[in-house]
Image (cartoon, rainbow, N blue to C red; front, side, top):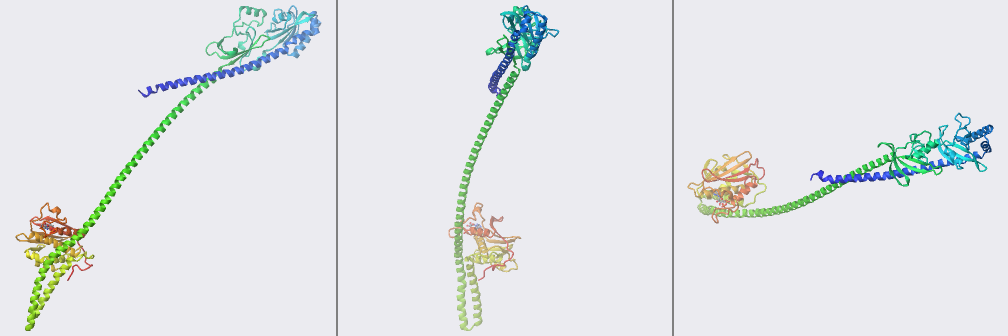
Length: 631
Ligand code: ADP
């Protein structure tokens, strides 16, 4: 269903509503307009009727008064010329004072014997009025009232007549003619007519309607009018009046004229009584129709405006509802978003909490590990110390035995007085004690805690001390130790290292004892690995860069299996038998290298065996503390 088809019933309903509103407005305005018009016309009719009636009544008795005058009676009884002249003047005087058109006396034969207009050329004097109804009425003893066009003056007028009685006999008729043409001129804003008893319009504010009839006259009536010459030679044709609607109280809506453009009037009618005339008001309906049309148009516009307002209100309400719905949806979305954010925040908070817990756990584990590591370092040191103790015991036993032997010999030489030999022995004893002191010093160094300020270690000294500590084992295993590309045995290497001429004493940023510990570990492991070789060999090389120093320790042992390499720096990883190793050496060494800002790496050498490289940052000067410890 298209939107046009859907809206068709609404459009029909609106159109029907418009028709109803317009028709109601039209009816209401029409009734109101007609009522007002009726009211105004009634007032006007009453006013006009009263005015006309009072005017006519004022003159009603004038003919009687005239007829009662002795001169008039006399002249009617005996129309002598001098009396006629007197009566003429009298009538002239009366007529002037009464503001009548003409006042005249007619004898019983219908001849006018005296008139107020006796001086005028068209004087009534001598005229015959026998045929005039006002004469006929008066001669019969009645009051004659008649409107007609003068037969002599040809001027219309209202004729009032009274019989002149003398001794109960009618001897003549006194007549007063009044001009009432002025009458309608005063209130001629709207058509106003006066019709006679036959419906002939003899007074009209619309000149064209005058001497027409409101209805078609019968032939008899026409003949009687012609006989009395009431309206002279006027044809008295009927006015084209078409009754359109009859309302109550004799009021009707008429159209006067032919065709649809003929104007319509509201016709009201008032009977004057005596004479038998009618005052007819014709109120034009044009203004009423105009105002009805305006009211209908206004109502139509008002209805349209109302429809537009309703439409606007509905649209506005729909938009408002839409807005409210949108806002609700927005609020829902916002609430959902908030909920999601809250959930997400809760998740994140939870994750954060978990992370914090994990970090805490890790920190704790790390601390524990560190503690364990420290303990293990200590333990490792103790193991090394045990091994060293065994070595030192072994080392010290020999000089001690020698010392005992030399001191015994010296005592013998002194008893014999061989002082030179005794002195030589004493020198040997001194050398032996010095050597023992050195051995003990090594032990002291190893177990000592790192000095906080020892961050500059001379590499050569550390290497020398390490080799010196491992001297016995190296010798036992007949391992050849080469430093750089020079092949030396351990003793020679140590001797070479003692000479600063061969090796510049590089400084690295590390505690000297820790460096020694690392080197002892690397060389010790190399020694263990190479021990099974036919010609065991250990190669030590030192490569100095501008910022770092790399110490390589290579052996010609079996090398390290590929699957072992990733785990070799793990604590407690060892391939050695129980009691031979704890698997801590490399872990501790790697940790020391890291602590010093360096690294410890391993790879299998191309010619066989393993090669460890200790890289440490170089130190430029050694102002703080002694580079090595001395006994
Ligand atoms: P430990 O010597 O007490 O076993 P380390 O941490 O020093 O502990 O060494 C771990 C393991 O690494 C050794 O058990 C050994 O199997 C291997 N390893 C170390 N150095 C070498 C080397 N030069 N050649 C072959 N294997 C080595």
